[in-house]
Length: 359
Image (cartoon, rainbow, N blue to C red):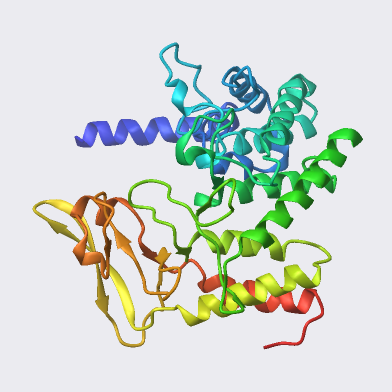
């Protein structure tokens, strides 16, 4: 930038800052968030704004005839006529649950125009629950792994947390009618019972959950070619946090939490860290020895031995991250620190809350 341009830019900035229009310029910047999880973390007053109401109206335009919403879609942009129908009616990747959470905040702030869409979306979630108490990734059912009980990426947990808020009349769901609140409470009870049934019991000890379970047998099940039946060091964290959120946990819920936390401790991988680097100019990852660092956890553990599993698109279980293809190493999180905060922060606080002695 030339000196003249720099001076001109500075003058414009000073004029705008001293102008009565300055608050309007600031509002224009802050009132247009991108669609994503941040849309439910705005200040409460923002949901009363015209910008929020206009965005809510656009979100409603994306709602399907069944009542659900798509994933991987900018819901603040007008719907495209050539939108992929395969993305619709899902709880995957914040589909349906995030739009409902956002609309609830706008409705609670006084926008009744969004209420019919919210009610239809809530009815959709309640209808999508299987008789066994679980939720599939897509509804209406479409076959394949999409129909399995889906803990993957916290999909079912997000549904349960939303319905938990509805059932309890918690903010921002205080406007929901009593009949739907009662249905939500029944759905949460059935979902919790299913979680307890699907926790893997091995040699008399409760362990963890698979990312997806068969909708009929409830056994750990395949998802994509690199997501085998296994114990999950990632998705199980969300399941445990949901169980910890129950106000008055039963002895079975307490036992499930204790069993899972003990399992997380047993399968931790100490003295390791993940490094990023490049292979032939492409992003890559590797796990390296790092005494005193970690621990890490694998995303997949063998159902019988607790050995970490690393699986690429050829669906062959490998013993290390280095043995699978670069595209998967860089494009999927096979190792992480997911249970760390749960064990060190959430779990001790939960034991105190429910009146259990410190461990």
